[in-house]
Length: 84
Image (cartoon, rainbow, N blue to C red; front, side, top):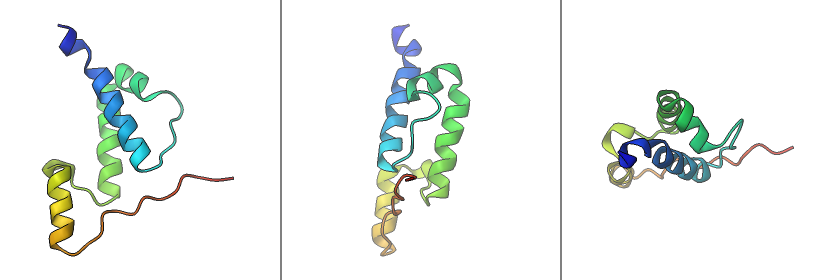
């Protein structure tokens, strides 16, 4: 049972990795809290962010890297965060 209930924690960790990789701000609340309160919304946000950046989440990260290498493309450029 503890493995089923800890899905929000794992989702929060993956969301944090995605956020760090693309330099996204952690706002308005923490990644784990977002997954705890509304997992479907969090996953939809993450999927949309990846699609916008040219990643096809349905084939996985390794397959995307292989596709970029095969097509001679570079992985998506990570835009810097907002600065004042």
